[in-house]
Length: 221
Image (cartoon, rainbow, N blue to C red; front, side):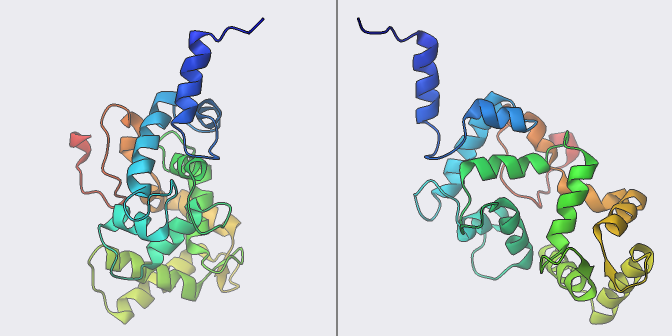
């Protein structure tokens, strides 16, 4: 005698069929992140939009992320490289849906400052040594200034780097470790400002433009 398929099973089957191949179940992703199942469904629509902008293969490649973040594909961007590496958890050169959701969750307003601090450190640790060195900080400062269309002199950039190390390098060994970084961020919480995307709180209500350097005012969210 054949088994009956319930309406709920059919609905779950339909939902799973809408997910990218090899991605985690919506419910499982919701259990691992601050997102609800319906918000993850909205993120899937966003993921598919970004992943089909250049190559329609259900994966986000670096040039597609660059178009989504900066509306440009005509320049190499260190900040883009760092963000892409953050998303590309399994280091296969592309972003799968599960990686997309879990990395975006880092930027959720409900995610703890401890988690944001940890991943902000990873963004600056360009060479994956477990330390932020002077040259790495200089490169990131220059990249962030460039994205903000600020053209500061080498002397000013050096002053920023020197000031940061004077305050953060409490051990005086010429590099910043995770413990020093945590203490520095606690004294300068504004460093985590770019680690939070306010619109992720209501992504299922108002579908946002996927731009990290959004100029949308808080009153418009």
